[in-house]
Length: 290
Image (cartoon, rainbow, N blue to C red; front, side, top):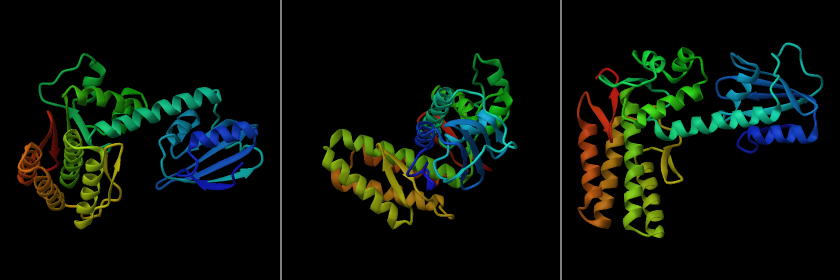
């Protein structure tokens, strides 16, 4: 068994497979940015788990959502103070991966996993329990507790409602600006790729990265989607406006005053409105305090 490492080199499914193949006995200790976890293993099978306040199977499933953590393996008997896990390893891995995929899908669709969500005024859903839970603004975690399900399952509900245009997302003003910016630039890249070849699109991606760097923002492209790697503490709406304006100027130099430029400038005008409600397509992002 690997003695130490981090999840960037070995994901949790990798570690589970290694433990099962080697039929090891001991404890896998994991430490993430905000909490710690322990998986007790006996002859390659997870028999107990704790992750922050979560225990048993829920603790294992929570770990599938971790992207950043260091781990340390210690040989020996499983400790008796860690709540037991009774689910078969194959079923654990299958459900953990399903929840991870649901969480990642939500991250790709929803404006923020940290937003506060509620049904839009006049919106209705046939799921009475879900409608009651979203009558007042709630976080994803709080929605899961109200529905008696995991955060990943709660996020799945929100994705469906968001795609149907039934939800409003309430975020701090800076998050509103950046959520809008990233989605706009992802859309700009998509539109650009429709009228340009692969090499031109790759060059345009690099230009956006350079423009972002010029306003002090570290971003990256992942499967055609733009993400902020490490947003600066004071990432303001003004920086988002500056970046979007720079992209519009660059697009105009490459393709003239076409629809991409007009679209960028419309978004700049929206971002500059005080007390704004940003519309990403038909879905509103409401700035807190607006």
